[in-house]
Length: 146
Image (cartoon, rainbow, N blue to C red; front, side, top):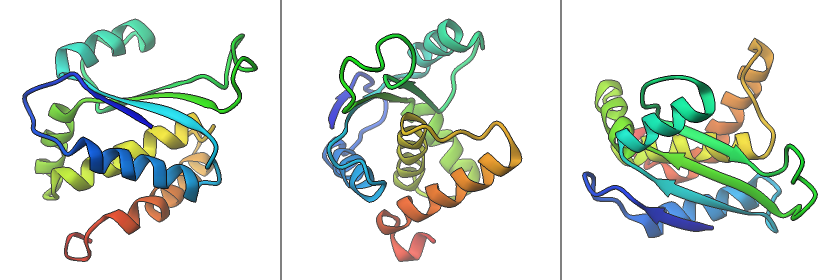
């Protein structure tokens, strides 16, 4: 997993996030797969959200799967990219009363699951995805934060 940090407002341990991503891929049965993680500020995230989803504000996480569309067969092991806004994640973590680290873990797992084909458009899909997110994120969340 390649991790690129393009934001500077929030200090992050990108090596830890890389480890989380790589371990989650193995735990999810995609050990040979590759994906990228891009960390951006709210302004960049708002532009991406507008461009790709038609929503004119920042969001916490976006996933850009490569296993869909006309290029899906070019490289079957390339899952795509997860983009996270640490600024938005920080606000969400504060509102939920949990550490930023745990919020970033949850968002990374969520994004990877989207790359693997999970979705949450229906209640049953949402239930399956939430349960899988919790199972995959749990090993990384400190016991005192659960």
